[in-house]
Image (cartoon, rainbow, N blue to C red):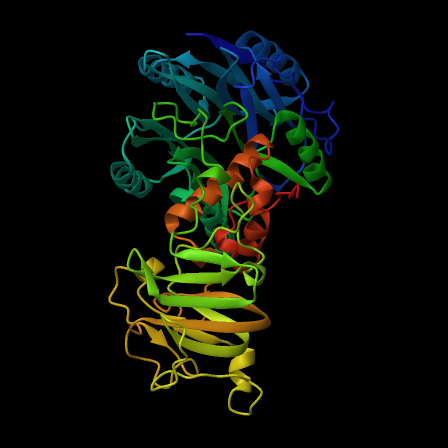
Length: 524
């Protein structure tokens, strides 16, 4: 067991308001070795230094220097970079003993805890990683403290939450959590210490849902004291430990070290300090994906790009003319052939790799704004005017003008409702009675002026168009979210600008579903 003892020093030599994010970048290696830094920020003062990435020997040497300058290690992170293990530390102004132990196995950790407790020290941070052979290794940071301390063994979520309830009743509080992915399972290890006040754990949430939950927690008088980032499928999830406090708990987007340094200087000028950080590896110039192994940080490449976004369904055609055609005389996969005007589709629809709009997969109908004419025809092109079909040559009447401005609708068993018991409905004034099922061998043409097209799904919003988030199924939205995350991580445009308008629209309409961070700066 290796021990680095950082002896007590005073903090008088430091400038209290200064933040220096210091460290050496690893030597340039293959494009497959890149680290990203993500942090929680809250109001604070004093020095706040991040070192990294450094070899263990360099990390210990740098720790001696920073300890002599009156700083103390409170968070350690480790990753493999260019084939070698590197260490990153978060250091803050402080006094008293400060020790770093590790890497060590579970038995060594138990012995170290007994030894440190006898010295009046308690754990403030643990970090877990796995060896190539699958063995678990621990890093530990110790500071002066008292009271009971307990480190749980790795458990699945339900067991961990139940154990947490028992420990909370004993007067312990969770201050640090580690989450590993092993064989497709998520395992939780917790550091509990004698504390008071409220204490909550939020289990894996997407970034957008995590930020929404963060706002709720902060409003309830809680602050984020520890965050874990773990990949589940194609998108990162966040686990949070919350305790009584009034910190802002801002979660920054992932950045490379140089960008993280610059961002830290901005945050320091605003009176904020790093509360906790995550450091993880990303691979290649391609977006990250689920590697399917035991790496809890989710390295690997080959994640979704715009090339993976769904092509228009075969029953959708496009036209440069300002018209919509719903053709029941040409059925494709039990759908009428629908022709949409390209120029009148919503501007914020994502673009595929060919530069074409990605058609929503969650709609069952259309709203057509600024209609000029409604025409029903037979397969042979003969005009149909018998009940219930309407032939409208002008909307410039008192009765029809509101429909021109508000839109005319139809919906039915297509798209997201193809398998549902959803009747075809062509609402007045397209038909006289709005019901009756698919017209036999009929073709509807709606000529539009300038106008626009909106997508409907009455199972989601009766009578109202879908907002940007609702346009796509969970599967497709997760793909869009992964593309946005990939750009945040790698700063390489794997088609991100093709979805930027859509992302911004989601963030504007539904902040809780926004797939990019609060401080994301669009490059488009």
